[in-house]
Image 1 (cartoon, helix red, strand yellow):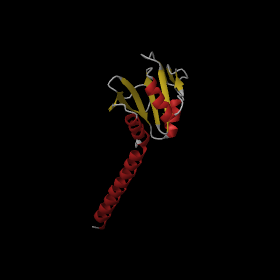
Image 2: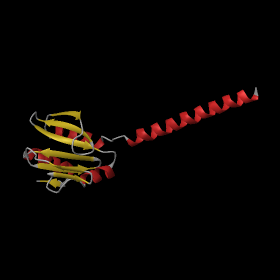
Image 3: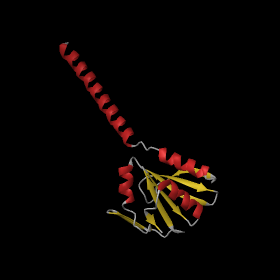
Image 4: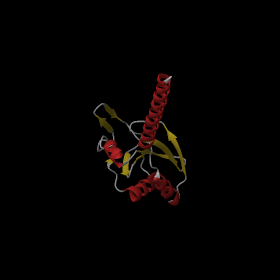
Amino acid sequence: MKSNKSKYIMIILGLFLLITVVIIISHKFSLNTTYSSVSYDKLMAVLEHKGFSIDSKAVDKDILEGIRNYVTIDEKDNISVYLYKNNKAMERDAGYISPDGFGYDKLIKHVSVDWIAPPHFYKMDNMIVLYCGEREEIINCLKEFMGEQFAGQ
């Protein structure tokens, strides 16, 4: 009788331990995959304040590692906004972009890109913004909000 009771106690303790480990791991995973959208939200507000109409949607990743949002400006121009877990992750990915903006060179991944227009890369906080185009109003707005471009033409 005592042997069966010990087995049940061991099973209950084992299940408790397993559930605790699963909760800790899932909590840690959720913390690691949280992306702050504060800078993104501010960028959208700045664009709207400057009189641009914007339409934003989440899209699949492409060259860069960040979570990508595709923003259409005035129904004709587009920017890609990449969000990262933190500034460190963003800076690491930004470091793989060539100074002219036409290459992405990560040790295991090299990509050369022929953009449809001159690329302009900006970064701040946990966000990289790519604008391919020549519209001065957009370039000036991004420059005012994010600072000088770090790569591109």
